[in-house]
Image (cartoon, rainbow, N blue to C red; front, side, top):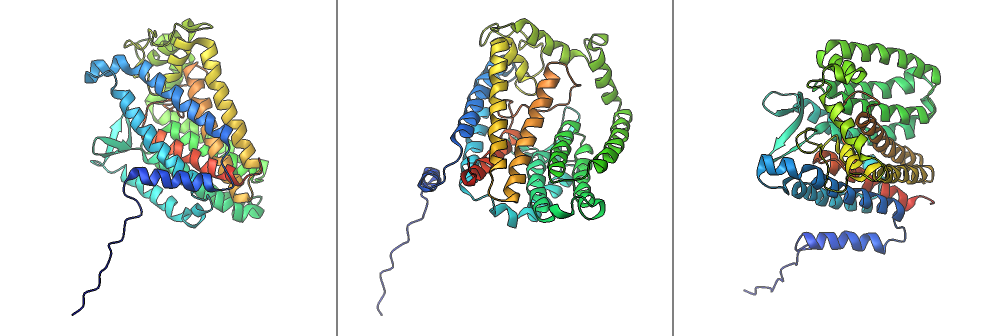
Length: 392
């Protein structure tokens, strides 16, 4: 009996480094490279974010965990995972998501239902918005933001000619948005719900929906918003705290007062990197939603202006990508991602400087977080991929 000598096949990837090298090779061998200005802005925001997460959190980290680098190490881990995701999505053609848009949306809806199940969903800050996975957790509402943008981009690109019809175009898209918004509000998470709804409204309006439909929707939305406020006492407290935070300085007005105490003394040049006073147990967990307060306190008006300028540059390049995308689907997808990031930035900074009530929204690329940062970078990767095919 003759036994043939069969050589063992060598695996395509020996380790994670090989995967990274393969993606880089695919990216730079392509004739179309992504928008380098946009990529540089994203990386700059990540660097600023990592520095400010450490500067704002080392006091809390030392007190709670005995390790001043606790939050920084986790933030760098999230950045690493997010950057791998961003690189993957930059290489993978954005049209791929057309095929799986329905499946992705269904998975996002299932996650939003699962997080509401007692014993599975984790509660933080009064909202049951997380699902624990070992020492980490995921926030399904973050997945829904991207999943709905992808699906709505496909829907609008196919049905744009019907969007002026309330029954055949406007209403079906509205039902999806309200269904996702409703599930998010059951957690409840008004901030994320507002970002999701506002982003989708921008996309639908850009598709050519009638202004009269939006005016009717605005009336219904205002009534619904008032109902949401009245139905939850803590939301009423946030409104009154926004109007006059000094009426309850140790309660509902505490966060905004401490945020203003951080922003005000920063002046033109700031107190100096690492020299914040408010991070010493005045401003609760400043590495999260109120990280811009610490930016303004330590780096001053100039530092805050620099960060806002980076976001403005991100918005400008993102809009250029959307305008120059090669197809309608790519235009809507890029617009949706840019709108989501821009709306989130505007809400977060407005809260920090006291223009609107506290909503609990992170600052993209800067705030400490897992799901939020990772999904933001993956969204940025899709935007970079569209830029490879745009006529910039």
